[in-house]
Image 1 (cartoon, rainbow, N blue to C red):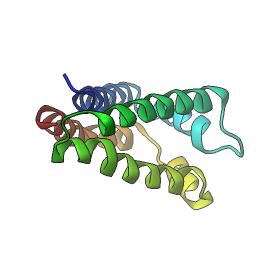
Image 2 (tube, one colour):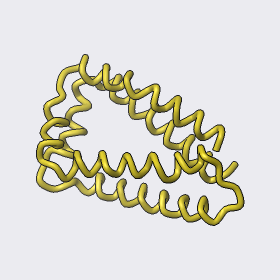
Image 3 (spheres, rainbow, N blue to C red):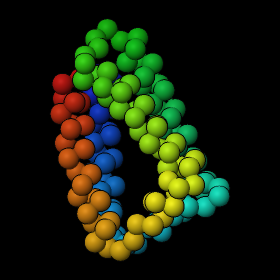
Length: 132
């Protein structure tokens, strides 16, 4: 299995697992989101998890770029999607209005809808991983 495939399957699994958590916790998921995004400072677990994710991604990107085979799906998984997610994360994390939007989501039904809306993303990531 190539690094792009492993990365894609890991992302798909992460989306599914967080969607299950959102769906199961409903409105209680808001406390997790608020802890990560609503305050002036990010909590240690958010910073630590982000650092681990970035280091793993950097290692995977290096292996992808220096590896013998690179497909279009691999480029999408390893370059295009992470750049888009980084832009989204920057808009939410470093923008007061973005943090307020995330903080404003409330109620079990809203979080269940968000959890279900994320599942097609997992399917797309899994398909890209398969073809990477």
